[in-house]
Image 1 (cartoon, rainbow, N blue to C red):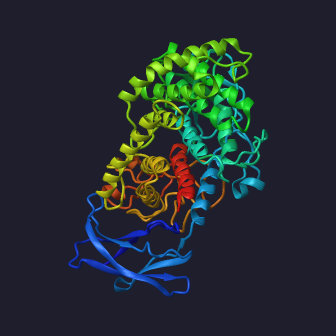
Image 2 (cartoon, rainbow, N blue to C red):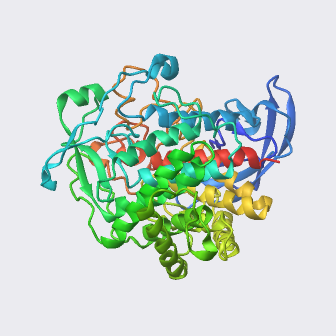
Image 3 (cartoon, rainbow, N blue to C red):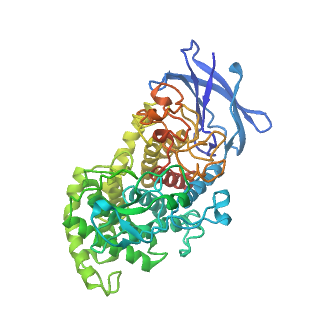
Length: 570
């Protein structure tokens, strides 16, 4: 009888719980499996028995769980099952691997930059020339609009070369959430912005690169364009080759893109106020203009053209209105005199009477609308680009207002539901279906747990969040650490045009792939999935866009969760 080990491939944090699974393909008569933990010199430092837990419904495996949380000394270790002649690869017990992965994830956004050179000094083997400048774009023929537009900069959204406000908005907002809670972290930084965009000196710099693109996407009337797209889908070519082969366009202007912009830019005001007050004010004024446009245009549809880029269509905008309102409410209260519903002289709006008047009126309207938003849109287990209300609840939970405690308790109730679901699952997951981008869902659930830990301090939230992160990094049914470059068995062939066209053997590091996806929308491409069971629906192949594509909205919650985990460790 063969035994398989499922464990966190890079390692475990020093003081966190340390669990792993032993899997058998058939039922066993024994109730436990002995295991040993060996250090770098092959000395046994711990031994115990893994206990039988259950048959996993979504993999068909018969599982045992082992626990070596008692091992807390930093070092390199292996798990050994002598009775089955099974030994794990070496893994690290330390906090350093978490810091290393956080840095890699932040750097992955640098590699997704559009329109600028990535010099070898900073990009190493993945250096590339500037392409997709996007500074003189025509409007897509379906818009029936003449002229050109500057949409320079920003991040490529996923494995393709599109740039989107919807999805970009939830991604950049998630990263700013981490910046707010870990303002003094070495990873967040606080240096003045490098206008040359040459070096990612901090997460704040990287986020601002995307925000500058956002600002360029705002139309003169305050509405925000939906995306930058090629006319047709690019093949697996470099950005420069893409540039030479076809034109790129501005496509669409919708209520959803405008609300994503409004929510993100209002949050940016708080994040950058102490770093660059002028930029922070610019962001807030742009947010107000966008929201006022959305109020007047509450049902402008998204562009349904997907011939060259993703759709990101969302028919329900209640959550996006809530997000924009709550972030603006926080910004306006903290900027002006909330008690008088007025904007004080000398604040961010001084010298701009039109914006000053609109801001005061807007504050009154938002305050009246928020109770209905809160009643209708409770927090979800995790953020998604289709469900953004958690960002609204976060805004209310992180300001001094009459709803602060209500918002924090809402996250606590949600975290308790996540814990219940985790306790029922053999892999300690709270998702109940592996969908497209399941790793993003898992990371977002971990992030919700960290928010509960942030405000209530109960270690059970921190421990549970780390268990979800460990699933992403290898303690899963396919034994893959789903972040490129993170371990000996991380994705080598992601569905990522840059990685497959740059001539470099290793893929761009720090990218989170979508992961297990039971719907397997790419079967016509004939990927070789690990098996027929739902929990084995993953293939490390370029053609598997359903399980092996990368996306910034999957990387963002993992980056945020890692930043919160590092400073939350006892």
